[in-house]
Length: 290
Ligand code: ADP
Ligand code: ZN
Image 1: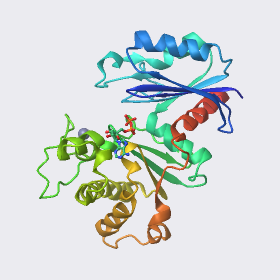
Image 2 (image 1 turned 90 degrees about the vertical axis):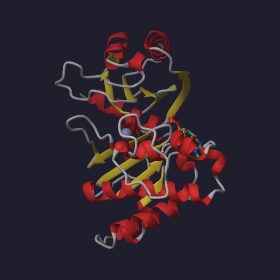
Image 3 (image 1 turned 60 degrees about the vertical axis):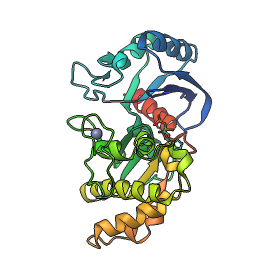
Image 4 (image 1 turned 120 degrees about the vertical axis):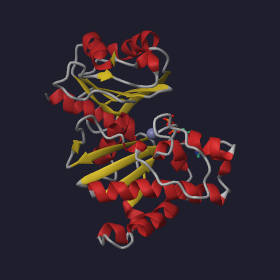
């Protein structure tokens, strides 16, 4: 099958054409401006590619309930030009092919489960820590939706007593995104996160906050793999620190093979930053089957 994939992000739209084996034939990136400017450019791109289905992994919140009147809409996003925008409808009308739709992070977890290291796992959580924090969850091959979809980047975190940074999330201040996303690191320490590599205190605090969130996910969902991606996780020294804090926070309560080998349990993304776009190929394949 010839499939289209669109990873719709707040700053850029990554577009690709590929197939159901996860092979990418071509890929381009278009800046995210307003729907009026950006959508026609995307339709132009996909319209000439002879695709059988399109898969979209989108920034959110989005409406994923097929029974809802606003299915396929980006809903209450702070990116106001895109609020209440029917992104699925725009592509379905213009391209006349099936359109698969989910959150960007559900796209990433699907990429890892279908084509990457998480093949065969029962419950996988993918967390991206970048400009924001988001998490996607795949349970026995199905992406987790519910009332809405997981918004696990906003779980509340207990601030370390020595941390006086107020937190950057406008909704909750001291949620994981507010305390630990790239912009929070920059605001707390006064430098871009990438320039703080040698400052141990930065990554110790970062790991402590990420580990609190992961501990909550472990206790709630019982994942058999947790994958961490996004710009901030390029600081690979975080991984051992996070694994140690998770162990400490769990306090020995859960004893599993996975937790006995945390280096195979809490892991970096495996698809060279293509997990999102490859997951969108799988979203397209699934949409084409219906
Ligand atoms: P986005 O979340 O916008 O899709 P990224 O996942 O690349 O994009 O995240 C961007 C954030 O990650 C920025 O806040 C940036 O400061 C931070 N970041 C990017 N590269 C690094 C790095 N090497 N080390 C630490 N932080 C980084
Ligand atoms: Zn928040």
